[in-house]
Image 1 (cartoon, helix red, strand yellow):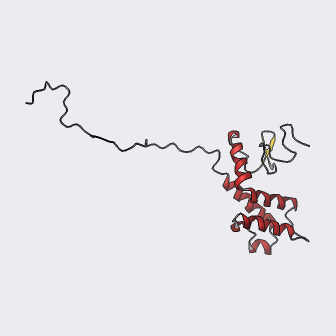
Image 2 (cartoon, one colour):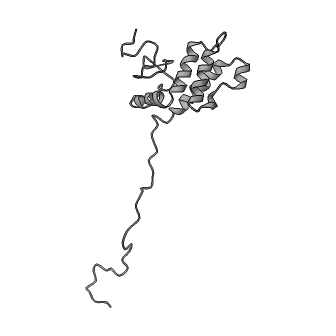
Image 3 (spheres, helix red, strand yellow):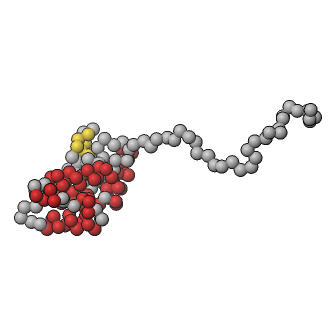
Length: 155
């Protein structure tokens, strides 16, 4: 089943986004990366998620499917570890505190925050510099002897 705009049911309304829609906006459901962003940045955000942040997106999908619980099965936990290590994102592995308290939900929030931070720059207007960049001047920089209304006689 799919939504009227062609996206699969439950997924983000931004075309091609691999994340589930979790926040309602404008009668559609968007993921936490696309919500409250101008629609002309949807493609750039989706490209970032699919190309550069894919291991984190896949880890989030595994955590959501498991319902933030690894009780009775460590294979999904190991799969997430492999994804993050392979992407050189050891900083996003489950922390010791999260392991002790069974904090898969806290881990999920940390992974989602990493994606939000990765997409934070999209949709924000870049400041316009106040100084106009110029190149160095080549040639004479001033004309001290130039008098346009002189009659040619030096007084």
